[in-house]
Amino acid sequence: MPRTLILLSALMGLILAAPAPATEPHRDTDHLRVYSIEGDFEWYREALEMAIVNRGIVINNVAHIGAMLSRTGADVGGEALFKDAQALEFCSAGLSRGMMEADPHNIVFCPYVVAVYETEEAPGVIHLGYRRPAMVGDANSRQALQAVEDLLDDIVREALMF
Image 1 (cartoon, rainbow, N blue to C red):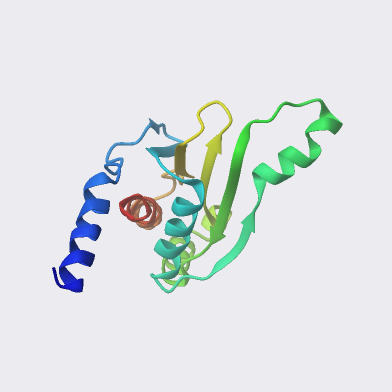
Image 2: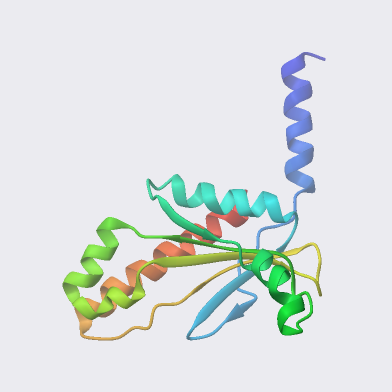
């Protein structure tokens, strides 16, 4: 069998064996939206980063929340919550400007944050989620804030497709 067909066959096997992407949120409230999928933390963490960077957006900071909680757990008497947990912070210049031109007080919604985490309670289940911006202000403000939420949801959904 030619090498190309062998590689194509192997790739198809990986695609068919991959878990189906989470199309519906695991948790969806007025304040947050979280999708869950079985898989590898590092895989989905990288997929999340790629989904952001591929839009020409720069990640300003990565908060290593799981590591911080592990490091401080003994000092505050807490138990391990996460196998790993990170939050990626970023802004979209265009959407942020539109959001703040609609209402300067919308600055409180910057930067945007998406989180990826795996709990100790459910190893192998990866969660990707974000804080939903409150739909406040006049119609222009709400429209701009909805565009931010749409971006966050698109980023997370794209990461789940990898």
